[in-house]
Image (cartoon, rainbow, N blue to C red; front, side):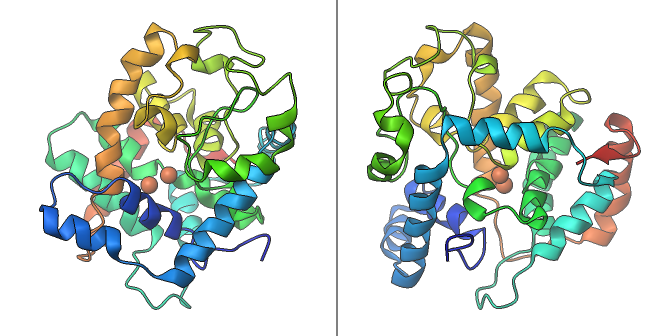
Length: 285
Ligand SMILES: [Fe+2]
Ligand SMILES: [Fe+2]
């Protein structure tokens, strides 16, 4: 139970949809969606956040960074990484869930259809590749879920804030004040975020993609900021400017999950070119 309470790691994203429903859906559908209650699943999502909030401490993040940022697990091309990630399908799940490649393509194709620059399309295509952490045997709560700063007070706008009482940092006077170990407006680059697929992929991609792409990858699960604006006091002007892109990206991530599956084979040549334009042959994971 401890390692993987969720039957499918996408269930935390389905839960996000309940918290942040698509504003373009008609009101009635929205209500129905919010009221849709699978109580067993809701329980697993709660348990997932209980573990996440209990164990994502400042020290935990330092340890994960020291380990994973050596990039000594696997060397793969982006394609191999996407194929690898796609082995994460859970066929015990009765829902018509999309596999990881389909989520990536639905996100990126929606960005492309809106005429955005190619690096933005590429960002949509690879933004969740950091989830390969699951395949390196990491617990779900250290791969997915909303991210938040560690080393300072946890905002009560973070989902299930009550579980932070179990986190030892919340009673540590170095970490439990508004600024904690940080200075006002020190910039997010100086702030440690809870560990997961966002930070991991950012670190892999940081030499290759334009700055807005890197912000999107690094902060796309930071709902307490891009939706709730709870950490402005740690951000500098550059962060605010770049968060416009993070906000622009979020609806493509959340609201493009259609049951119609994109034709991966037909789309492959376009994405192969795009990957070649920005990324080296192989990446270190
Ligand atoms: Fe993600
Ligand atoms: Fe995503």
